[in-house]
Length: 293
Image 1 (tube, rainbow, N blue to C red):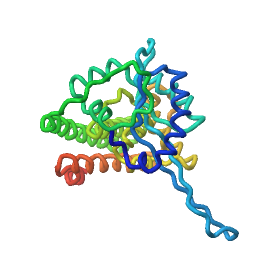
Image 2: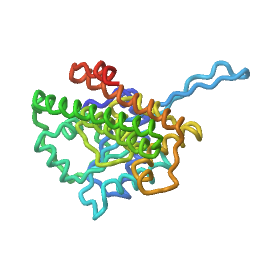
Image 3: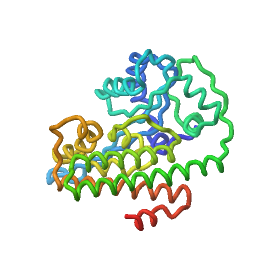
């Protein structure tokens, strides 16, 4: 097991919090196993004219968990994820990936890169004692890399085409259609980022969940859509809801300045994706993005 650096540096903090989190999840979902995929470390320093020597305080939070459930009981996986995250929220924010145990076992048999990395590197924070996984086999890195590079190139191109469509609709003052295309461009970029970075594909149209998942790959993503002010929250919600509301709700409204702001944020997502692809595949993705943009 080779977890991330924060885990090693703050193992005592993780141990204290994990017990409470596991207790909540076990009561709700009766899982076979829970893996810790990542976490955030928050630092805060406060000073005043009355206290100029306050130390920096820090704590771990925003856990990323993989939860294996033996029986999903006729529920969708996203319903399990939402339910678990809602109950854990009172203790701390968590982002979960819920899989049926049989799916994870099948992935291990085929040397799926996500399952392989989890079993090799993730911290196992709960084990019901029902499973015994074989050691993961060797992945054909060359074949896997070629497939991922093709997926990356095609996905980045699709994201750029959706963005071009959004700009065309904006020029034609079709704001709701422009917002829908921005959602599609964002979703495409984030799905590709998640897939090439972790090997995992999520069947979701939620930009919020995709940003949280892709944050396992890029620390920059949460800063693109801050949630500090009401205007920040409105702007993000306009993008989040664009997949459904632009087509089925007549009261969806978005202004030209809001479209322009979202366009720049989506373009930033593409830049991050291009940089990840360049680092992973040693390609000219970034320059290609600039040339096409």
